[in-house]
Image 1 (cartoon, rainbow, N blue to C red):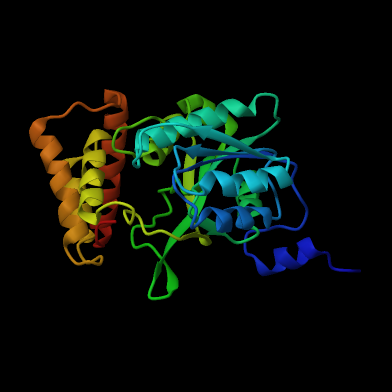
Image 2 (spheres, rainbow, N blue to C red; image 1 turned 30 degrees about the horizontal axis):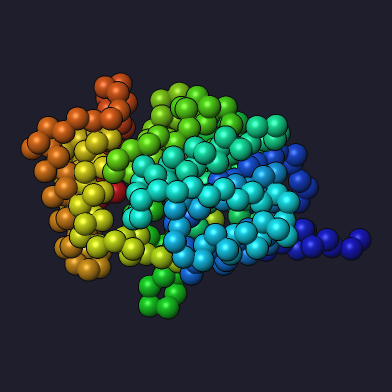
Length: 313
């Protein structure tokens, strides 16, 4: 019997089973001045063994050639839809999520079981979304899934130290439609963290969230590269506070990340942002129930880790 191209891919890619399931997905991408990476990202998607029913790419106020590049692909592929939004220059987490919400409004009349996000500076192996769909098929309680983000260092991609199976990066993820509708879609948050908010909300509703180490997500622009690194990490600390992270958990998490290059910078800046927000007693944009649930999760992780004598995740 002749081996099909799909079977050859399935044999070489862990997690891909021979035989398609009939699940469908749609995809959203928000792009801001991504002319350097967006072409590679789109080519990576076109090579997928399972394509989305519709893919809405939103140019979030881009001022470079992003619009032109996306427009060229849109004219060649019917499932790609292009949406242009105008706003003030500069990267904005709130603006990014508003762009994604605008994209989600373009799925009316499309049949789908999963809704996904793909950042504009990402490339994937051809079976990435095929693999995710199969993981969902194997676990009916899986609400959010994605892979492990790999950043380029020394000419090669390496898995982030901060990757965890219980934390699904927003960079390339799928969300079961029922789960997405239950938590109301990605939240608009001043300091970012829409992925963290989504998966915590999903678990509050009884769903599971899981990142799979064998599914690499290749990130072509280091986080914070478009911004000052210290400012970026400082903002992440404020994000942690805004979402309700506990003081002990946050301190240990940041201390664990001090060895990340450049040494001390990231961990110290992130912890400084957190404690500044704590000292100011800034208002949190999430409910008291959300904070209580998140801190209970963090306490459970601390008990499990110290109970085994292992270091803080």
